[in-house]
Length: 464
Image 1 (cartoon, rainbow, N blue to C red):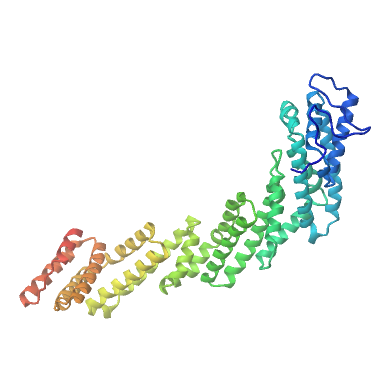
Image 2: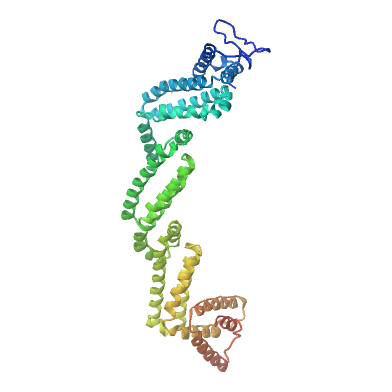
């Protein structure tokens, strides 16, 4: 992959020559300490060459065999400890380069050094595969590649002159983006992925060195922004902003944060944008939205509030209040009492208005359907005139609407009858309506103005 040249010949002799030639051992031959040290020194030089990007001059087969012989002849500790020290010494030099980098170039410097280190550790791991399979496994040591990651963490990213700077730069970049500035998302993703990978050995580096701080920083940022926004903007504008901010944080996780951050940041956004202010939003904005048919604004509010179920309770209360207040206004309107048709028409329009809101803004939520139903029931059953006027409305419908046999008028009449049945369902004492209906039906028969009421009778009897 990365090593070439110097391949050995059959028979086990090395193609390398010279006074530093490493003696080759068969499985049964003993390896003295002096020979082991000499073999290790050759591997050490090779690792230095790998660090210097001169791996193409090395022989993978020869290096692998030398490492194999050391482990085979019980010198695994010499090899493991030696490699660990070489890696540590190299990373101390790397840390110096990273420390020297200016803040604006720190992430770029880390990217270069981290990418290089991972590549080098893959090469070293491949040479030391036998060490990993035997010595590391037997003595419960950290595998070579992971050992290299831990060393990078301890020597570079956890360095006292790097750690705090790195965190500040990352948080500053995120806040710059929140404030509308363009940032290098790819570079941030690379850096944060590095922190995730540095969690070798059971430590959650991403969480302790970034995520915990990120969440607290976001809490401070959005607590201030949401509080300021709710005091300076309309409820509709606030809901738009809240929805946009929640969407942005979701996209931020998808773009360059780790997936483990998603639930945490979304929970925080729900708390700061919804839970903290929902009572204010409902008390100052819900009624004008209901009364002004602001379906789009109510739909947005509902989408936000379903994220925090407790926030829906006051919204239910305001919906019921608006329906009851509007219905009571109709019931107490003396002019409408003079015109039963106008009275029922007003109730039908009111019911249609709030049915549309429940359907289009609240996704036809079962709970809001119940609030709609109970609000009308409680209000209409407090006034017996509703039953009488409903019967008069039907009587007028049959007297006028049925005079023409045209299909269009019949369809319109059917629609009106369906609406009447809806109001009829709200009546608890349906016998009162039935009594009025029979009286008006008899008058139509006597006057000769009765049209076929077959559409109405089944509906009434089914609901009675």
